[in-house]
Length: 639
Image 1 (cartoon, rainbow, N blue to C red):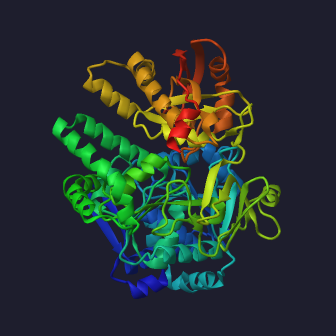
Image 2: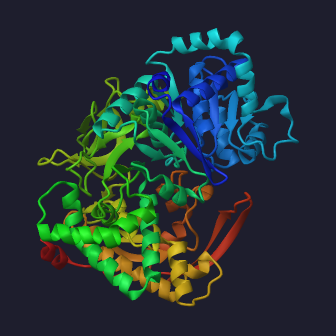
Image 3: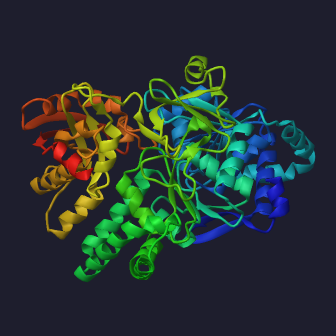
């Protein structure tokens, strides 16, 4: 930060949209804001080694609070802002947070709610003062007041702050980030300054990131990717971090900023594609024909042009015309026209979705990483991008495959430990620094690229000995805009079955166009025409899966459309939108039994959590559909 304030002092470091207007802060102004905040933290009694919880949406002041806490020797612990009070209570108590920096009244209320059981919290600091006037402020402060206090105490506390900052080394803790808790309670991942700085340096150099780049910081601040992109790489390179006004305005803000460096998990790219396809359904017949004609050409030559491969002049001219009429306007609409480097990670992306964006000329690449690795394990170099691999080891990272197929790595980004969990640390990281990822994969001999099959614990065998890899099939299903989520079962069984969630936006738009009335997700999901459409999608996926010799046994024989969306509040997904497969399997065991039985319908009751925290039950009779499966002839034809 000090280097950037000196070298890029007048350059914009942060932007935030508020009341429809972009506010901005230069690197010099950012350094001053952070120092005032750090001095204010000292005035409040923040000590070396204190844990400071940060809760809220992406805002410059919350990023500054993390760096200010680091400056005084404290450790920031960002939390998921959409977590319910009970989830927050576990993390706050586990790390022993003395201070909480909350974004607004909603987050303050959740912290106050858990203080009956979480007794370590001494001070709550809040950023947005709306609705806070009548609260008890004996142990609560507005963040701007803390900064004002810090500025007033500059002479008295300045030397103390400088000493605290000077004491910090490469091996001091930089941040503690909690895992998403896919298989149990979240674990606190301790990352050092060495982990974050070395990873940020190597990854920035790998993609030639520079001070002129722009990113949109919209992903959860508690997620390691956001920390690396919006703090680690931003501070290393000096590029600008833009914070949207709200989740509702994110797409509008994305179009206004036009980032050059962009990251999104597969779900975001899936949602964007769904939006595009819905709009095309509403377009005129001429526009639809134009779109499909030029997209067919783009799929053939777009990725080749991106990778610098030879393409005939005629094909180039047709692509240029398509860019003028279709691809360019579409990228403008999505806010992706200026993209120089884009990444997706978190889970596997459907190959069709991946190729769609690359065909538009968007340099979308895959990376493979973990919180424990400070994100980066493998990356795809320019010119070596494929939809079925996750690239080569990132700079400074070593990767090996164990005898059982599990992927191991070690690097300068390898985490220090799991906080207060020595047993899990020993189970995950050996004395030589090798970390078990829990994923199954292999290196391609010809290219040296890593292929991830699935989570090691999820990869199994069918009853006939064939491989069972559910994520491979699920991602193919999610390519269809009508399908939001899919969960495939079949380990140690003679056939595969699936749960499917429809996409309420896409299917609801179709229903409106066809004058089909519905009153709820449950009613829409049970309509015969909706089930017919989903069956067509499932059978298309089966035909595609049948062409893969290794995974052809993973075709879906029977499926049902769930009566509710899988939800993090109901424990069925993590806050990063990953399915908790074991929990879903246990919770809906009656539905799985019915899929493997001979019934054509099943009655079920399910407990759900409403937005206000109340519990309720929904009842439904679900139709079970048989899907067509394909034999060896499809694979032979493909070969």
